[in-house]
Length: 108
Length: 121
Image (cartoon, each protein chain N blue to C red):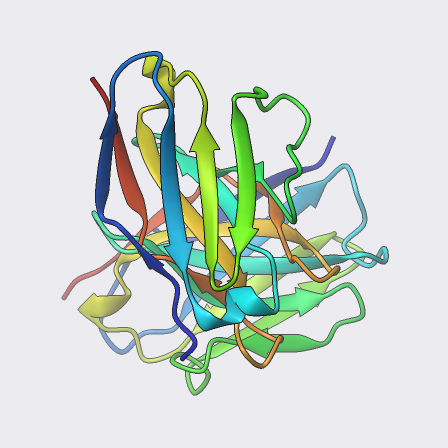
């Protein structure tokens, strides 16, 4: 099916490592991209492709892929990382975009 | 540095047609390698793909909105425009324009700040 599934909420203690996952059949064909959205702000691309960070994104953000699952890992989570995270990829046709439902990350 | 800015009415009535424009600066929308997208976000909800226009002018629309949406461009003004027909309250959302790459990952690397559109009688 052309859907991307994310856990609705995840929490992590300050300074610890957290993994946010995204599942979908299309991830067997296409890499996922990850976006961070803080309240009231536009999304920001944090990981794209196999494991690429745009300029200005801290290296504590990393991406990985296995089968139909893509993961975003934050190593040493900071208070400012608290946000909603969305994965996206192409759909099975390759012509359209898909978004996961989003994961709310709480940093304790 | 690319910048995108949405503009358009913030309040619409049911059955009306929404027209939102995205003004792009820092890069030509007709230069190769990019697609120009519209994404929306219902209040308190996740991101929803609306559609995009390639640098070549080819368009793709979300299957769920295809019957009501169109995207066009004005290359001299370096803008692209979303039109959404037959509005209902369910179209109330923040609408974002964003730039995407035309490679296999289609990452959206630059976004506008978003504009809230409310559909109400």
